[in-house]
Image (spheres, rainbow, N blue to C red):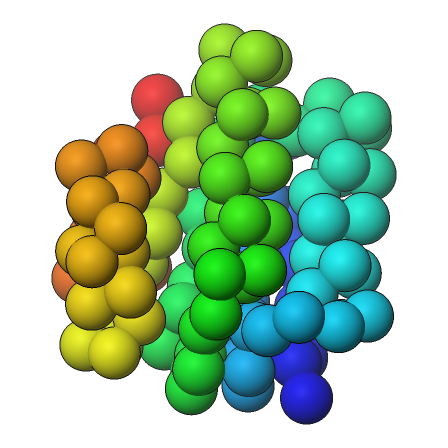
Length: 114
């Protein structure tokens, strides 16, 4: 099961907290729906708090790729914060750790947003 919480921190900046398993299924689809809705409302900068993510599969990574593409088209930024080692390893194996910007804490990720 995946839990998603989104918080507008200021105009254009959304913090999205994820906890649970980001895997194939309807829960991960709801992440893409949320991202698209927030982008349609004017968000340009997304920070994902990954501290609570227990498991991630290729579908989950695909959801982040989709979000990244949408944010880049809008001229925004996307930060990945507090990812557990297993989650970071999933991005290393696919070499996507060279595409996504990872931060040790949410505070660091939020501080990097212009």
